[in-house]
Image 1 (cartoon, rainbow, N blue to C red):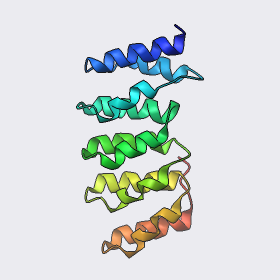
Image 2 (cartoon, helix red, strand yellow):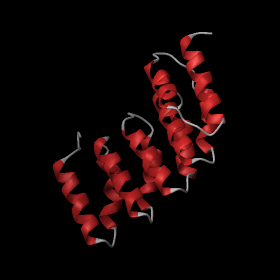
Image 3 (cartoon, rainbow, N blue to C red):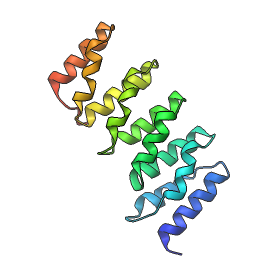
Image 4 (cartoon, rainbow, N blue to C red):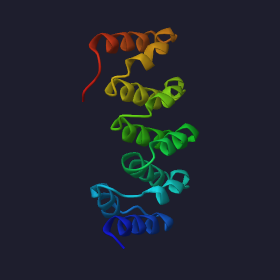
Length: 151
């Protein structure tokens, strides 16, 4: 068994027991080529921290579309925030998450806005210019004038 295979197997075993060990996550993230498809089922695990950890691993090393499908169905706002932070680092697949901009949870909406800003996808924020919230509209206009947020 190669190091990447062992790293994934150990992480899957740990997640199956309801634990997430940072060493396992870091071992997988260090691998250049690694198959994390066996981690995808944990995107719907009952424990929120395991869902976020699985999203990080799959988004960075696997099929980002699996993460996007999971986040679209996610109901826990804390998990949504965690996964959105993970997706902020990715270069693809964000367009499918435009629906989060209409979230009733202000923290989720704010994180989605920041994600699109950092991605340089200010075009995804245009719909927010028609919101009833004047502060939000002003902020979006300011973001569009300032351009993408690099940080």
